[in-house]
Image (cartoon, rainbow, N blue to C red):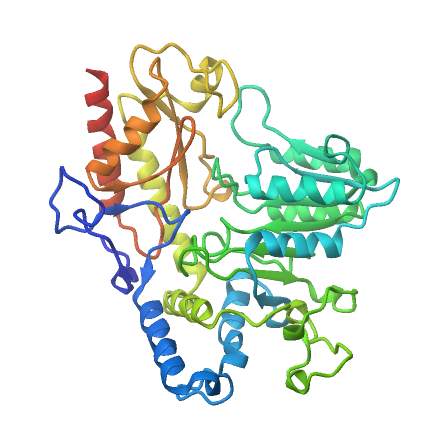
Length: 445
């Protein structure tokens, strides 16, 4: 069964990716949308159009554009669509910058520690760039990361955080916490954190609450404004399919409109921006935080993908399909002869997830460390492999590739599978499960 939006994407063939054991002209089984989304055909068209405008109009394209997308207003085309995906008002959204740069900008703005309230609460094993940003921010404010950063890890024998444990820490340490920041969807385990309850608990304790939505936007439904989220950041090359390293974005709740901000000329009132006045006059809302003019080619590519989202009905129908695909893939995987239920695997593993050690299993085995409940995960299943062969995961990853199944590995022992609603199919899920079983049988001999 095809996704109705699949026709809008360019899918590499098995030949393209060097898959030697399947028919070369067939599209590969692409399950890496959580790392890099596929190329949307409308994005290719729009980028080509902007290149032609650049070639024919040059600098005039900023104010005189033959297709009505003047470059000085190019983000006006994407901000409303981003707002729809985020559950935010258009003025609360800015398409700008890159993920970690925006994270630093938001922390520079909202991390205001005092001698009594200076701590930052986050998940342990946050994405490394976030961890580096957190540590550097607290150090720049004169604190030691080991004192100022509270990292939450799963209970012994478990793979993901419990909601009640997060809320308990916020209540217990809230008076010393100035900033609560989690990932919307955890990149390693695929856990979708209970964003509304965490935000509510943080605000009740007087904390600022921010979110890294790199793996959440375009993946799960969001209601940032109604949840009273203070701020959020994201990238656009994963589930938003805008291209490698492309432009990112940030959200700031409208209640913070009068907060002092870092200024740059693109955040200045467009009516007088090109008059180059000496005094900064910010745009109201998040767009007043824009520092430099955005990449037109990057925004055009993002717009092409967002047009596909709009045609698909945004996250309502897509979420239904995401749940269907992920559940189907999970059902197939759990019937594998090599599958070990998570509670059994957690007991048998000697150390936490990510350890270089492994149990001395004679046969290869795997478990799923992503939550089973649909409301606790997005379009991702993370498979943890273990056996006496410490190279098992890498061998599985490489052999799946030979069968045309593109997966995403996280060393030392996790493979992530992301059945993406816009373009993946039931057949993709079945191919992944079938070839995983073939690979494990081969490695079991």
